[in-house]
Amino acid sequence: MTAPIQGQPFDPDEEKLLQDTMKYWQQVWNEAPMQALTRIEDAAKQMIAITTGLQGFYIAIFVFSSIRVQVKAALGDVAGAFILLLFFLPLACWLVSLFFAIHVFVPRVRPGVNFNEVSVSTWQKIKDAYRQASEEKLRWLRYSHRWLVVSFVLVLIAIVVFILLPISRN
Image (cartoon, rainbow, N blue to C red; front, side):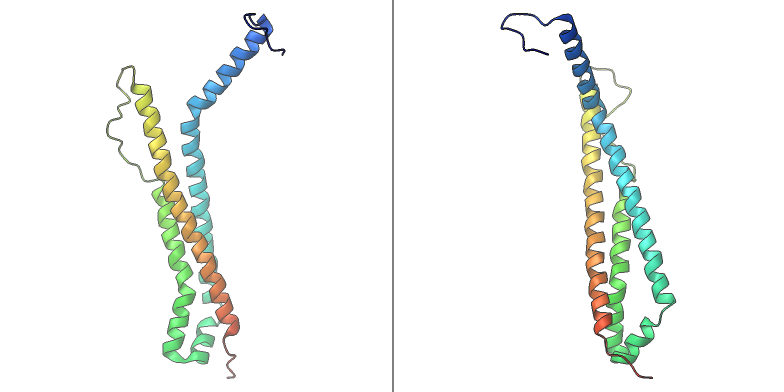
């Protein structure tokens, strides 16, 4: 496509290409708020799957291992209880992360938005409601992600503490 000379109209092929491009980007602009909600909810579903899987795996490690016995034997009852608390902090973080990820799906009434309203500005109100819902859901998803990252840091600390525990000779 060559640039037209000042004051010269586009030829029919260029005009059709321009119109098709405008229609495509207008469609993208109209569908973006709904697609943003879908992507955020899909990410929240993945966060829920990850946190529940990690919880099950982590609890299985404690059930089928002798970590409790080793910690209490190496450090005694009081110090061992505090170290065991450190080992259970990732579970608490995963529960908080799970709470925030599930909160993405909690329905919320949007006052001021009426889908039955027929007026000139209705489409803008609906688009603003989608944008606001998307921002809120994204905020909850980010909280969930932060707690998941914190849990990984705590797991790493717990592993280091476990490695550094003295070996009990029973």
